[in-house]
Length: 293
Image (cartoon, rainbow, N blue to C red; front, side, top):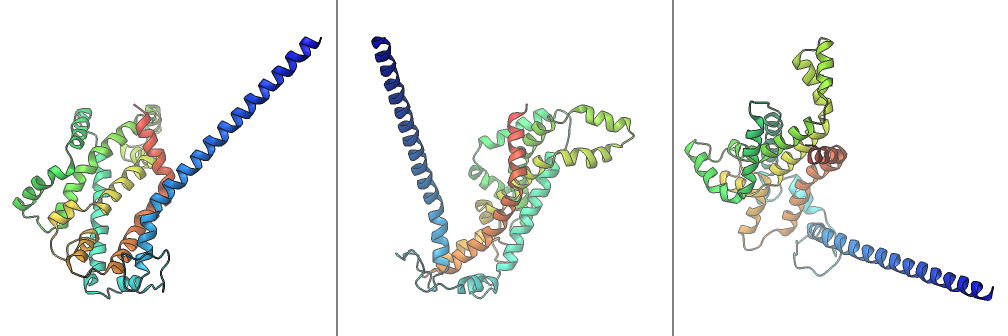
């Protein structure tokens, strides 16, 4: 009996040590995850906080060593909204150019991505091959083409270039997502007397909403944040977009950093709002397009 009791005590101690070791490993794992997550969050938010810090400085001291503005001021934001600086005299026109280009790229990416043509698989695969070549390598050929067609310094030149880059992704997502919609839905609607336009507008578009949001958001953000092609193809202050205009701030000996950061924050507000408004549908569209097929 004493031997059995001793074995039981040994087994109990071993089990207790195993549980303690497991708890310690779980604690260290959670602690490591917390530390790593904190470092990533701080590393990600530090540049954004620095933007806000500089924009609230009246002089726009980019080399300030303060963690908070000594005398916080919204003067730079007011200057952007009222075009109160000579760098900002065309701000709202340039903002409208950015919005126009973004909406047009989104519209045509959605339109061309949903077109059904013969041998569509061949077209879609050939279109995806354009991503093999970096977009920067195609900048000069695009510039020459637009010059030859008289589209230099015209927003439509940028729209054409960006649609060419957004459409392959749109085709891929729509094709993969479309396979998740049962063909029986189409057949049932035809039996009930629905015409092809009615089937498309009342059945397919609602069912394709996540994919439409995903592609539309991608195309809009692509056009909104693009700089290289807008810099090459748009030259006058009245035709250029906000990203190109922001680069003009660096051309003087004393750059107005506070105005630059305030402009960047205001310009970044619309895509942030759009992303958080549609993030659930966008995630659904991206995951469905990536898994099906």
